[in-house]
Image (cartoon, rainbow, N blue to C red; front, side):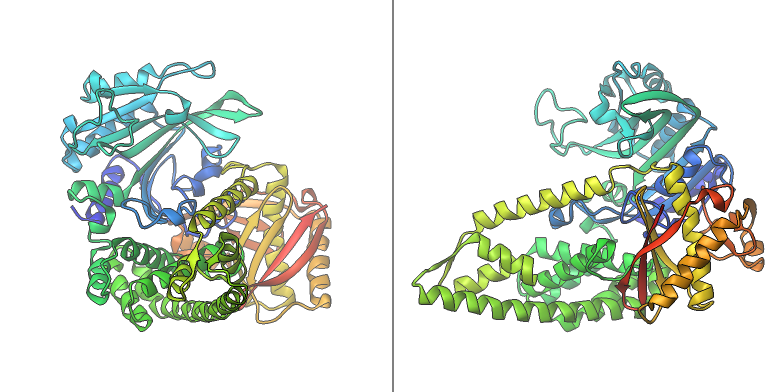
Length: 583
């Protein structure tokens, strides 16, 4: 069964069970402080999981485009992906465990045709915070899963929360038995030997965690996620996602073009090409910070491995074309933005080739210096510094070193890279530790301030100025907008004064639900209009701002506080960035 068939079956099944199909949210989140990209189907729905009313009702389903970046360096093995698609269904205070499990079982066994003997499930074992989830286990038994294939695990395996605080609860996970032999007598779903593969996760959100304590939510939710690539792989009897129709045309073409039999490099090129194309199609642009840097890393790593495969880099245009043709039925936006995608990836590739050339010059300086000192080995720190300072890949350094008769200390390089990655990961965790549910008075005020800033920029710069992205934490806001010049001090002051003038006027902030076409006719603005459902929420601030938005917002502008611009800088080509604080 092809991936698009699985997706269509899923959406139709849940639509037939009373769920409204909502559009996928863009990969670049509009106002989420917790992540650089949309990482899960529930992420855009956080306000509604916390109690805000969704315009489409209490039963929702969708497919969500996702990017997760923790494992970029792992891509190349048989399973890691940075871009993937998550299928999900939600109950916002509607049904709970019994109906959720019944529907999951029916979809897996009847719609996908998976024999019930191939399904094992896990449930929460219970602890001091929450009792053992006997009800979920009973629901699975009643559905048709035998008791010996129902397992209980603790919080590490069967409890879900985003970040350190927020809505959470026990979950139940479904596993597919691949038919491989057990690695031991104790082999069960918690084992990572490959016999059991997780295919679906249903989270029963009935708690809220704050300051290490759990309280009951007033609204019980169900949040589920099913990985499309993994399910396609299993149903097609393939060993890896790269063997499915999502990747095979590009994988085959790379094998045809390359004189090198390097499966790892082919996977990296295929995966990073798809991920880069998806990010660009949703507005992503390469840069030296945050999500732009992730995109730059993906394109550069892909380019490096094209070189490693000894494939002419001029083939990149045709590879993009092939990927568009492969994926256009699932993602029509790739065809719509094909020219833009090609331009950005090829330009970034060209920049990286200059980086490689600069790095090679620096490498030659290192080699000449070592020769003059009669040293025949390049230490790991030097190799790592060439990477960190000039972006020169260590494997390229190694190849050139061998060609020039030098030994290299790659063990030290690996050690330094691990330290670097750990620091980066810890920094990322610290930066986004609040989790998906970090909505408090401060972040809500910042959210409203982005609308005021957007309106002020239109007044000062021009009506064609639009928001290109934003990021909010409890300490500051960051706002990207299209602009062809650096703002003058006078322009920045005008923007700042306008926002504070509107704040001091104590303008009312109102919200209403309407049809999308009516919202547009009324003059409401939004990013990615095509991604919104038919019924939308529109926030209006006095007579100065009207935008489609998920919220939440303050009730009146006086609650925002004093607005101050602390920095204005380039974000990417044609896009500027303002960093501001509320005092």
